[in-house]
Image (cartoon, rainbow, N blue to C red; front, side, top):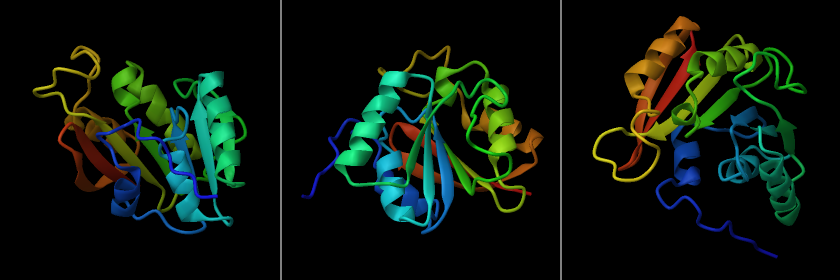
Length: 186
């Protein structure tokens, strides 16, 4: 049976974004703040059975929905993790220095503890060649999305990433309403 994911995020197209950042077969990745798996499901299909996707969220109902979707799509390479990524070490089950890539999709604009999130990313990311993908709201000219007080901007994210030894590999277009950044360990 061929199931398609419902179009919940009409502004973002995960398949295009994951292609842009070079996600590959066999990688081990995590999506921090994964929700019901809008990026997790397509990532799991790309990396295949030899890879693993950790879907990390603080909301148990989101992880339950992710579990249902992964079974519906017949994906056995998805591991839900209940954790608050604003707390260092909270992503139990993900060992230090093990991930090829971490996704931060629309999570930075939801938190004032952005440095703490990067500290947890830094813990789980591989020391050599680990990458971070950040996709978040553009702050200009939005009449919807998060309130402007909580929004971040690419320059703030670049500054935080640099403080953790990351270098900007590229900036990329995701939609008219979002920016995309890809960082790599220096």
